[in-house]
Figure 1 (spheres, rainbow, N blue to C red):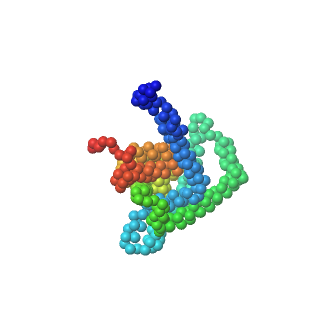
Figure 2 (cartoon, rainbow, N blue to C red):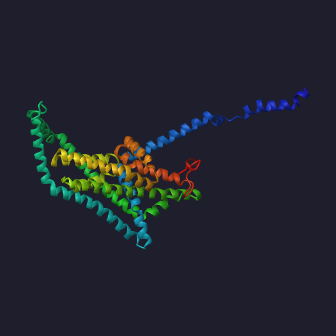
Figure 3 (cartoon, rainbow, N blue to C red):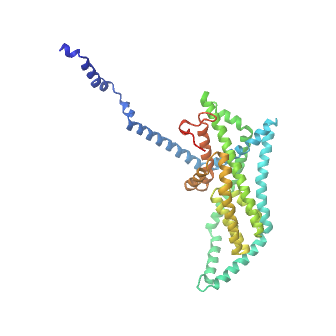
Length: 384
């Protein structure tokens, strides 16, 4: 028995068979492969839940969040101007007022151009529209089959008249008044927030960085600088592309003698900030105006001009300009626009590219000014 108890091999066997079972902790079940998968699943559920809560809060407070986001993007776009004036010794309040006044003047000038051109040509357009409608009715009566009978036209006019005089139309008008009130409120809030972002943006960011220390502080500072640069580049690049589109379509409309050429070109400029959807809507509006005013052949020519300008912009100008300014490949921009449009509609299309670019920019400076996150670094140098 003594030899058995002192046998070293038996001691090793006992240590392997008895000791681990006696000291095994309950949480050790999470240490195997299945446990790690469970931990990752719980983390994903928490992240998705928090993201859904944030998204719901943003949707519930659109009157605040939308002006806030627009003011932030505009502040990033005009940050180089503010930085240049601060370096020249211009007081912050004066530089802010100059920049804010310039923004208001630009937006006001665009609105004035639309209103002036529409009012100046509205009578002629209305007369041409009425004449075109009568010619369309006359042409429909010459068709060999009964497309639309006069009684049907009278019924449609009566239905439209009843709708205009109904309570449903009145409630819609009241809803429109409420929408205008919300727009004015949001505009005033946006201008106010933009004023403080322009004036005290750097101070606000430094206040938010107070909890960070050491490497975390440097990383947060890099993230803020990169986000500001990316968002500003997006706005300036999009504005350049929109201006090229508007000028190209304006030249085509003037050559084809389409009325309301100036307001249509301004509309093209504004809708260019809504990728994919904006270009389509602008083309449809321009073609309809040409159809009413100048006939179907002229409308087809307008469609050709719009398609040509959009193709040149989409295949050459936008991938090069936007891709370089935000350091995104043209394919990534196309995928981001498509996914954003499918998931979020117009808002998703507007925000998809800057959000994608900002996220990728943050990854590129995660571990240093020119050092991406470890998992995003290339494993081997890429030839060419």
